[in-house]
Image (cartoon, rainbow, N blue to C red; front, side):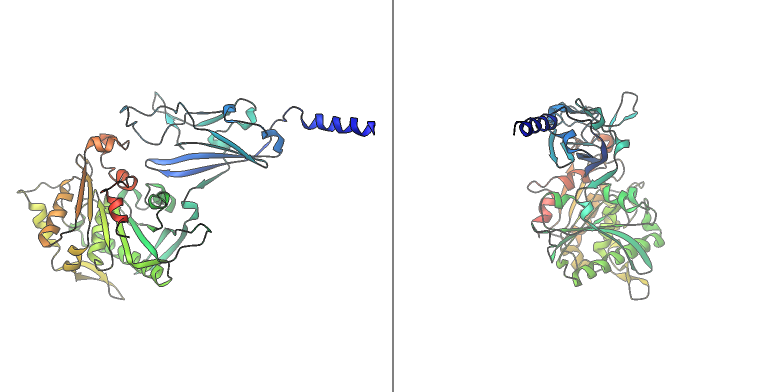
Length: 424
């Protein structure tokens, strides 16, 4: 008996011996779409021996070059410095070590010579658990990984799409939900689907707020329609053709019971703000509300053009919204057709812009709202962000075009997304 007791004690002593060095098999990061790029919110390290990670705590780890995503600290007006408190939380499950942290820029931080310094995870106990971006073997993106991806063909075009469908607590898709379709900006034209999906928070904004609403975005391959696109019928026809394709896809979602055809919403920024306006011109009776943000000018020339007299932009727009002004699919081709002005002005819109926008001047938003008011619009809203407003969201004055940041982030009373959700 004494022999077996001594053997048991030896085995117990061996099991409680020094922690073996970790042998890392995989390093995965969990990321999310931020206002100005991707953010890392967790690192998962898979090791071969669970004992090598047993007992580790947050005090054993440190993150380096981990800065908030963005260009400017709203509190100081200066560039972001690395977090003083990394917010690290450590947990283990089997042979997987999970390190959660306050979300930080996946791109790292900019150094004094403006070079990018990559983020690093340091482990004071075992250097084998140090992580640099080159060691990452897989990335999982919150919300986007759960989206449906595919392509759709209509009206002679084929476009890729990404679609978020909300699920209940059991993981089942919720049927007949509202839909918000996002129109991409010129910076995302002719880019791959993931670039489009991660350029801003269009697909994740509602989901991260816990609001059960579908979100849809298409990758549009035609080149940016540029300033004064309204002077080029072929460019306008292509914008309208892309929108016809999107509407056909939405009709398919409605037929499948995925979204509610009576609760369709549209939003977009920059070139996408202009596309939002044209989408509503084509299908005003189909949508419940829209948010055109810092809109370009696919209706009449506004940008890079000076008014000959005060109010000229609004006069030109009012005229442009009468007669045969939109292209519609007739089953075989896109044909120039009249706009349903009555339905268009009844459709409520919330216009958003920054006062000092250097890319799409705020005069366009003033002109659009004035022209709609003249035609009978009564339910439009407008918000003009000051430089101080944008600074509170980390947007410096030099990037005042980025008014979609507060639009997609701010759900407080009276703001565009709050207004939109109240109509669900």
